[in-house]
Amino acid sequence: MIGKLVMTALMIFGLAKPELFLKVTEFWKLGRKAPNANTLKATQVLCGIAIVFIWIFL
Image (tube, rainbow, N blue to C red; front, side):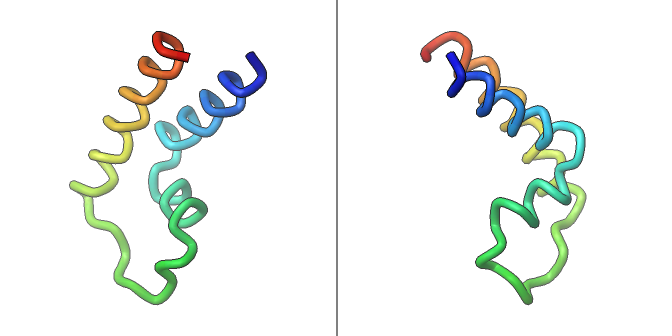
């Protein structure tokens, strides 16, 4: 149950602040260009889908 809550909190963070979420989770890509609007929107959509999968399948 704690794992669900932690993963959900991380995904909600991705929904709220997709640019910061990408910086935190893809820190190994430092020095690359900033994400464009499509990348940020895709991050939000995938975080939303991930929340649904977390609560259905875990």
